[in-house]
Every structure is written in C-alpha cells, then in structure tokens.
Amino acid sequence: MNTTFADRINSEQFITDNYWSQVVVTLQSMLGIERLIILDCELGLNHIKEIIALNCCLDDINEQFYQQNLIQDIVHFKFLKPISPLEEQLLIPLFFDDKLQGILLLSVLQLNDNFIPTIRHFTNQLGEILYYRQQFLKHKKIEIGKNSLERRLSLLENITDYSETATILYDIFGMAMQVNQSMRALAQIFGLKPQTMSALDFFVIVSKTDIDTAKQNFCDMFLKQTKIVHQIKLFGVVERYFILDIQIFPYFDKKLKSDMQQGILCQLIDVTKIKLQSTLKEQIAERLIFQFRNDMQSILSSSQLLIDPNTNEEEKHTATSILQNKINSHIKILNKVEQQLNIQMDDNPTNIITYPIDAKESILDAMENTSLEAVKCQIRLVANLPDLVSLIFASRTELYWVVGSIFALLLKDAVPETDIVIDMVEREHWVIYTFKNTGFGIPNERFQQYLANKELEIAEQFHDIRKAISIVKIWDGTLTAESQVGIGISFELCLRGFI
Amino acid sequence: MKKKILMIDDDNELRILVSIYIRSAGYEMFQAVNGQDGKEKLKTLTPDLIILDMMMPVLDGIGFLRWLTQETKLNIPVLAFTSMNRNEGNVEIIGVTEIVFKPIELDKLIKQIDKILG
Image (cartoon, rainbow over all chains, first blue to last red):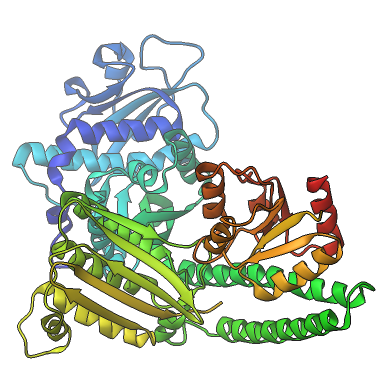
C-alpha cells in the first residue's frame, strides 16, 4: 500500500463526539460499566479536560484525585462522587509513547477477575487515540508515534488488502480502520457503507440480528474470546450467500509480554457457489422423490392388479407391461441422476452451467428486476408458470441475464397499457418458454437481420439478444424470435429438461 | 346406477391402472389428462367424485380447483391424489374433501372413495 495509516484513516474522527460516543458505547456494553469519564491530562492533573462522560461529570471528581502523583498503573479507589458501597471504582492511566495522555475513571457494580485484564486491551489503544486527538487539535493532522497502531497493523493490512476475502479491520472500539478492495466492491454491490459503520452496526445490518443479541455476541467475543459466525444472504442484482466471521485479532505486546486485543477482524466469505451446488443437489433430490412417489404408485397399483382375482387376462397384460415400463424408466432416471450427482463442479467451471437448475427461479427473479421499469412503461408482466416443471440445464445467473435481455427488448417495443405474457410448457424432454408483447413490431425480415447480420449497426438491446442466443447455444438450447409490424415481438426459449 | 368418478391425472399409465381397479370395485370411470381437459369433460359429465392430481402441466390441480369452486356452481367432492410430501400436504387445500398421498395401496384408495361416496 502506498498511503500511510495517517492518510488512510479519517484523523478528524478523533475529535468528533460520534467517535467518543462509540468508545463509550463499546466500553459500557462490553464491560458493563456504570459510570465513566475520559479525561485529557496532557498538561497535568490540575488541568484536566473532560472528553466524554457517562452518568457523571467533571464536578463529580473528588479532591483526592488531584492529590495523585506519578500515576503508573491502575488505582483501585473511589474518586467519583457520590460514593456508593455498591460500586467498585478504578482510575486507569492512559499511556502512549511512554507519556501519560489521559485518565479513565470508571465504576462497575462487580469487579470480577477478568475485568482488569480485559479493560487493558481497550485502554492501551485509548492512550494512543488520545495522542492522535491531541495531535489533531494542535496541528490539524496526526503524526504516527513509535509502536503505533500502524506498525502493528501494517502486516495484517497488507495481507487483507491482497486477500480475495472481503475484510474490514476495526479498532478495538469497533471503528473501521481498513476496508479492503474486495469488501469495497461488495459494499458497492449491496449498498453497504462499512467505512462509516461501527462493527456492531455492520453486524446487525448484514446478519439481521437484533441489537441486544448482537451486543451479547460482542461481549462474549471480548470476554470469552469467542468468534461470531453467521450465515447470511445479501441481495444485489442476484442473491449471494456468505459466512460472516467476526473475531478479535491479537498482537503480542513485547512490553507487556502478553497478547493484547488489537481490534476486530470482520470477514465476509463468499459461499454462493457452494450454496448453489448444494441447492442444485437438493432440487434434484426433491424431483427424484417426487418422481419416485409417482412411479411407486404405478408399480404398487400394477402389482396389486396382478394378484387381484377379479383382474382379467387383458388387464393383467396391461398391468405387466406398465410395471415393466415404469421399472425401466425408473432405472434410467436413477442412472441419469447418479451420473449427474457424480459431476464434480469444482473440477471444471463449465460443469456449473451444465448442471440442472430450477426452471422458474431465474424467470421470476428477472421479472422482479424488470417490474419497476415495466411499471414506468405502463406494462404488466403476466406469467403463466406451471407448478410442476422439470429442472433445466442452464446457468442460473446467465439465464437471469438472458431473460432480462428479452424483457428489455420487449419493453422497449411494447405499446403502453398492454401485457408482456410469459408462458412455459414442457414437451418431451424440453422446457419451452414464450415471451410475447403487444408492440409496434418491426418487419420480420429486418428483425432477423438484426439478430444475425454481424455487419449491421444495431442498438444495444439487439447486441444483448445476440449474446443471449450464443449463451443459450452453450446449454444445447435455442432462442428464437419473431416480429410483426403492429403485432409486436415474440421469443421462444427452449432448454433441455432433466427430470 | 353406478356412481361416476372422473380421474384427472397426467400420468397415463397410472390413470389406466387406477381406473381398472376402481371399475372392478363397482364404479364407472372417466379420465382427463390435465385440469384443462377436466374442465372440458365437466361440460358433458357430472361425476359423483373427482380424483385430482395436484401437479400437472397445462392446468394444475390448484388451478382446476379454483375454477371449480369459484366459477362453477358444481358441488362435487374432490379427492386430491398427490406426490407432495406429507408435510407440504398438511396445508389444507381449499375445495378438497380428502387428500391421498402417493404411493397408496389401491384397496385403501377404494376405502377412501367408499367413505366419501357413502
């Protein structure tokens, strides 16, 4: 990366209320803090300034506080008024570059064994952030100190930026510090703004987890060192599936000789392909079960007729031949399915486009995507899709694109306040879709030239249809179209059926 | 007089087999290959019971039932004969008197028919 940490982060954020509120929210929700005040004491204890406070203020600090000198470590004493026997209070010095930058005074109802080691993870960075805040207030820019977060993160940043896994690095308070290229690309597709969202907000939005559960998950992550792992689905032009993985990333602090929690690593691992493959196999299994129930009914009925004393010879002959046919056809289906399930899609990327898919999903998705444009053009999309239809051989995303291109041309030609009708029938081993508009139309001879004559200058919609025709050919299917002046345009898309 | 049953199912072989068995149980059988064909048959025939496959091309069982219950004044009991799995089948289908899940033994099917037709 060519830019420095100081260039990349928004240094102005260190003087904003929003940033410090996020710090307070994190401390309060992760550690169950009752009251706290963060003080800037660059000029000594007698010149302290309140940066932010929760349920207390500068006036609540008692006299004993100002009598402290040479604060080196955590002081377990009640400096905040009113003093309650139910509260435990701590004074935590905030150091950076071996200098005291500030002080955190806090109270909790119960001080368990984990509390002090955990709060150190936060206060270590708080000292550094205070340093940046002071720098920005003085010079309107920040200069990176020794042992800075930049040094600690640089290796990780380089790795994440080159990683294909979408990643966000947050500081320990959940403010985004680095969003890698893959995450930026995803954010654009799905309309997310990870740069300006806290880790908690990002988690709530993408996983649709309620805020209380999300806070509990984050607490467990900080206190019990657990990982947050969620399966999520995001909708852009097409649906994509991810594993959201959020965890604390540690750094070995030589001075403290222990692992310190540096921040939060959030990754979105794209599992769309795996999910797609498993869905395809589920769909095959579903169809197979359906077919199996149907065939079993015939097999069961034939065998019952054969042993029934009331069945005459002619009927027995019919039953026997049906029984044989059903068994033979079922063996064929089983072989076909077995062969298909043995195709390892990972071995060859082209296998993914020759794997049977649901025949209706892409059509319905494309209709949904076109619906707004259709409303604008005052066109209704009417689909007559049967419940029962074979799986088809095509690529789901490409079929979606093909149908989208068909809709685009039909919409452009359609007369307002008419319908685009989508029909779907199954003949032999083919699934046939027809798409028709009521439109202005073009003479068919010219229309066919638009689709086939490569020397002709044509509009973008026709380019897309030409491309669609060649895509469909890869699936061993056909896409043909006709047009008539005063009637409109119709398409016929034939795709190979499976079972 | 024999009671009339119309079986609407796109599986030709199954229709033949079930028809043979039901006929031998004393009913008069009529057949249609899908919901649309079923509608045509009902122009000239008033059966006492319809055995209806739910998943069919052209016009499926749901479409046929919608037409039967909303667009006709016919009050004919319908026995849905389906390959859906039983969990999906728990959903009540409007207009259906009884649901039979495939595969079913034919003598049990006859008992269901006898029960509906009294």
